[in-house]
Length: 280
Ligand code: P6P
Image (tube, protein in one colour):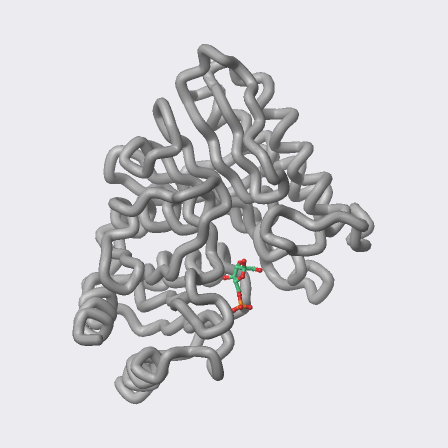
């Protein structure tokens, strides 16, 4: 396992350099979910694959940037799902982006998710890692990720990060989101899942939502390498998560790029989501 975490840290340092120097023009390719790939998306995917290839304990990789799984070591124990550069379209307006990793033991069944990790590339490069019910926060300093603190969410927060196109939200969802604003919650949404969730984790809590919408009935965010890792992190930080009704950590993906509606936050806000969605 240590060699996988080492690969993640080495990938993060290389990706940060690539973001700071690489041309961010578009390629002629699309990923499995139809997003036109930046040359940088492809570059960052290659960086991760190169670093993971050195870890003989890895059996299979799933990347947002590749349609199919990549077998590395037939006898490997761990299955790694990752989004090498989430929110890459924000780079050309100089907003923060991130990488997301889920490490599964034996298969990509969500019950086997044992370590979740993300990296935020912003004014600073920061890494958050959840294992065995603890969420640790690291800061890149002089080429090393230095431990800063453990992250624990408050029972109730004050930030509201509502994803998706509002005109495509179900009316009851809009009413719930507006209700939080009427209670004094503050809008914090950049369109980058990693910095938006990082802010909620570090500022004590709130709600991030990406619901089922009329244009994306199964949600937009991918289960294996976006929803499951963040559900794991929020649960470990003392918060909660769901798909509106169900615990995301009980819902297995039907295919490697499967998506789901998802909600992450403090316990108070997730209880509100379950109350509203449960009544529909
Ligand atoms: P919308 C970025 O493209 C992404 O996959 C996530 O990082 C982000 O949370 C979401 O899409 C934003 O989607 O529809 O709100 O712009």
